[in-house]
Image (cartoon, rainbow, N blue to C red; front, side, top):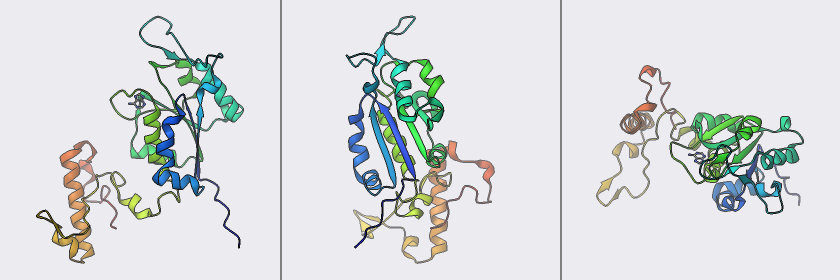
Amino acid sequence: MTTDPAPTPALGIDVLSIFPEYFTGPLDASLLGKARARGHLRVDVHDLRGWSVDRHRTVDAEPYGGGAGMVMRPEPFVHAVEDLYGTLADRPRTVLLTPRGRRLDQALVAELAREPELLVLCGRYEGIDERVHQLLAHDEVSLGDYVLAGGEVAACVLIEAVSRLVPGVVGNVDSVAAESFAGGLLEHPHYTRPPTFRGLTVPAVLRSGDHGAVAAWRRAQSQARTRAVRPDLVDEDAGDDGSQELPPR
Ligand code: ADE
């Protein structure tokens, strides 16, 4: 009996971090673990200390001009990229996670998911030497307006969001197409069995079998929820042309 050869991964991601162990849980469990095992996705996390500047495995130094904290030196990042790709010019699209970056949203996630390869750089300490930003980062990306202890958690978020859009990673393509943000709106409520629980009953329309009515109810729920919770997402000019409507299931 022959078995199918593993597919060539549709997306390969290399990560540079001084805490590679941060990634073991998120990358090995659940959806990402399965996608990697099945060969749909490649993620390799590299320990930046492998390119440290001395035998004490140093990757940081005091800031020029003074100030609190330490700054990550440029050499480990640049030497790692040269070892992994040959030259800096041959590196794939490179994302540096930093609170000063562009806010991650589903549009950027979708854009990154179309790349064949990504390089993800994680910083720690007070920051990364500016020359790393200049020499390596195609994109500077932030999770939001708050400061984490480093880029590792942000990198996990980015990798999970991007990987879900890679063909073969999520089995049910419809669920990706209909979820929050895919149509520019937040998702409608979901219900399953039992029909009544703790006095709360599933809306009758969902059990009516009328697909048109179900789609209309979900669309209205999405719009109402978005307007209430995230008015910034509502495009008042979208009008009735359906440009912000979720695709019917
Ligand atoms: N590193 C520290 N804070 C961060 C944030 N908010 N987003 C991305 N990377 C970060």
